[in-house]
Length: 324
Ligand code: RIB
Ligand code: CA
Image (cartoon, rainbow, N blue to C red; front, side, top):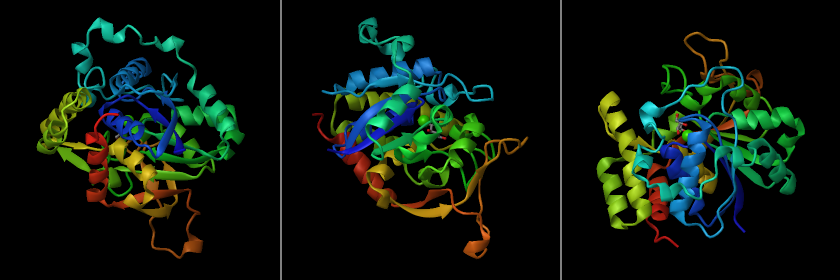
């Protein structure tokens, strides 16, 4: 039996790559996929995840549950400008109606918070939750049942920017900025947390040539899908940063859950700015060179240096493995 995990996703391009990595790794038992607003609306994200599961042809696909439509307090933002209008680089415009015939409408999907709680109670202390989007679903579960934090083994969070610039503002990373109040609640709830910030995820990326090599080395509908959905992010990065690379933010969160040794980890005390004008959503780590007893106690482990080659080898091996 593999490591029991739940994936919480906002349905974008790197989310799809992360789910492919998780769902094709025999070391994982994916108990559920919960969906949230974020890169796109929660409705669009739930359609994207159903499309992905259809393409993967899994014998025993995990249930998909519908989560938050908007942040706890702020107005919802999104990232279609990066991931494409549909969150998957526009690929859904090429899908025929038959593709969607069996998809469930969002309202027919189970509720994410209830499913999270049910699974946490069924597998006390066994479940690792990997969050790939805003933290609203987890925050709502903790609000609904505070004691549920004792039921989760660990939470691995893709989010934050500790000693590097943000990506949605100068100070903040998208997932945390989308719902800083949810992040603040999660960072202070006492759960065992691993944070995978931009400091780490910017160390692992694919350029166009590598992506073509990977997807052409083992031609399959899945690899065609990967190649197509990635173009919008590559184009966005080329247009805005002059460098067509795809940072594997969400896949790295899955990778370090598979093997924590892929990164070096540092216990840190991290706060989330929820009031700032220019710093809203900033994740501020207390990095002062003080004696340990003078620092606030750590509330998480933060991924620092990443063994990029080791991760990219793992990613390539699983992506290019012949479909079962
Ligand atoms: O900042 C990167 C994160 O925001 C990734 O999870 C990406 O998918 C978006 O959700
Ligand atoms: Ca994401």
